[in-house]
Amino acid sequence: MNTDTHPRDSAASPQGATPATGRELLVPAGSPQKAPYAALVAATPARDGDLEVRGVRAHIRVYGGPAASRRLVFLHGLRGDHHGLEPIVAHLVKECPDLQVWVPDLPGFGASSPLPDGVHDVAGYAAWTAELLALVAPAGDVVLAGHSFGSIVAAATVAGAVDGDPSDGSPVRGLVLVNPIATAALDGPRRAMSAVTVGVHRMAAALPERIGTGLLRHPLFTRVASLAMVTSKDPVLRRWIHAEHDRYFSGFADRRTLLEAFHASVGTDVSAYASRISAPTLLVASENDDVAPLPSQRVLAASLPDARLAVIPRIGHLAHYEAPAVVARETAGFLAGIQATDSRDEQ
Image (cartoon, rainbow, N blue to C red; front, side, top):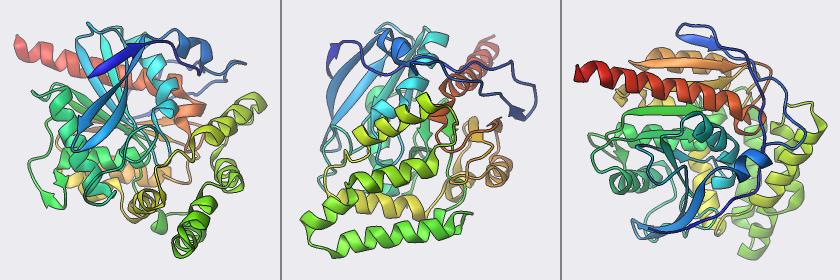
């Protein structure tokens, strides 16, 4: 992969108390600094590069030192790209200096080209992710993570739901799911709003392509979605989150790509793959997340053979923006547990 090393743009860190022990944890989110995350992200070693994966020219940003011995691949959510995960990743690399984090722009989003063949659905993205993992860590010595829609893709990849055909799944050391979609949107507590959103996307599909794409990229559509998801009361953080959505929410390649991915995101959830996931799993949920509600996270955690649930109070679906330090700390603890298990097995 061809890469360039240079700092990026984003920022600082909510602080939280040490979590309690147990299968389900309550981890305080704290309050953000005035310049959210920019200084920390700018100080994080990172390089950009392109990699050919399953016919896709994929843009990948790699964080951490080139000599780092451990690897984690992190998948962003719908309508996002690698920028949205930078606050978590910057905190995580600071906590784990020996960790290298690969954050791809999923096919058809950010700077990655769309899939040349097939559909931008869960199976298509899972097949693409499986090939990426094989390139990044052929021996399976990698942890896979995903936020929101990325959690569905990550779970499907590990479960082996590739192109609709069950397989043995991609070998990974562990699985981290942040704000995982444990209940399909059309079955969740926001089913009415989800139905309206589905209607807007159907309208965009029925219109002439230029007009339909314009509707999906309209700043008002972006702002309504952003307002619906932000839970922080901090005005500086709220303005920054809205600005991030303004910058990156419409970075999809074309209407077809977005519509296929959107319908995949509302039509399935992580629980569909839980029975085929044997890897140790960390679920990071938010107390006030009405996109991925906490009760469904508890059901999901109980359905996985080796899972731990960490709960961040008082925030919603945007944990990657509103409490990235907490997500990073829980992930670092999870990775340390995997390392400790490896050490015991070697003795």
